[in-house]
Length: 378
Ligand SMILES: *Cc1c(COP(=O)(O)O)cnc(C)c1O
Image (cartoon, rainbow, N blue to C red; front, side, top):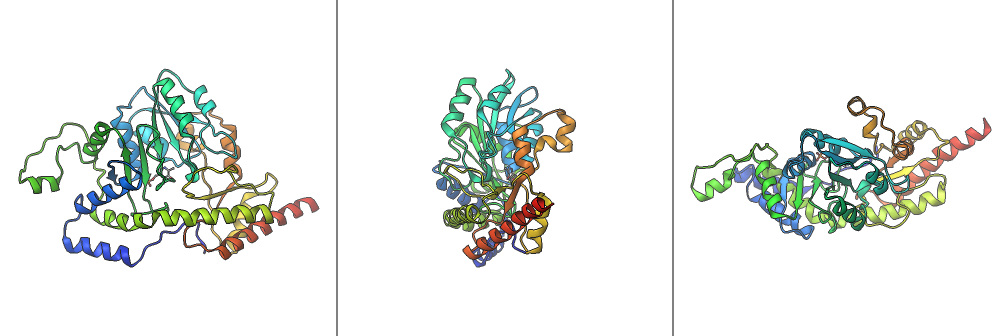
């Protein structure tokens, strides 16, 4: 089965893991520190905080900014559930905002504006599929209203712009992301005060970590805030250091594959459209396409599966999930809903080759064009 995404792991990761095991220092040591330095450098940032997941990163950012009960946070519905869950973790209210259009499935500024109240404290921007939100427009929007900008950058690691929009950016190293540590995440926050708050909250609010106490020969520590256990361990950091060395090259391969997909889809099945038709900076995390309204998506999914090709959907909208429908009933986001009904995610990862892209597009064309003809004949 050709998978939508697949991690690339090999001998260098195994070697790095063996070294950690031989060192018998398993968490929050030299590997984590080296990974934080390297990941920060890859984004032209001074420092970063490695954590256990992107979900933890989002929670720590909201917590660090002091967002809580009574506050509202603007979030897209066209995202993974973690984006909105993190807002609920701090007791604040996620306010779902529609996308710009089915061609630009990023949060609409006009819609965000319409949903602002005096309780609005922050906006979480998701760089959907790796395509960056418009930084200058969002900064103008946020400055005018005194809002924090938080980036959910799970789809966009390795781009220098990421982490420069506002307060902080959250990254994911889950197994299906552009680089992985199996589970893992990071925060880039440019304000050192916010960064240190996040670093402290990552480890139970303790004033020093285990390794610092070993080095300073003092057993003393204090707890000065209610924190969490969102630490990263040495094995994950060691894998992350290896993966990070490949990130730019892998993102470049993704870009070339996306260009090829665009060219071949336009040629073989022009009824299928591809979002972000205008060029835009991207980390090319996934390959979303939009099926024409006359085809049944499940038929296309089944046809591709028969050919050994996996497809997925990004995303079932959050405002339509049972949890969120029960919490916030009656929300309608027409552009998000239209996009979500027609979206299909095709395989995209750096081990895919040009002939494989061609085979996927030929199978997609057969499925879509076949249905169209059957529809016409009926
Ligand atoms: C994967 C993902 C997350 C969650 O990442 P974890 O590291 O699994 O917590 C959050 N937001 C988006 C947009 C994602 O794609």
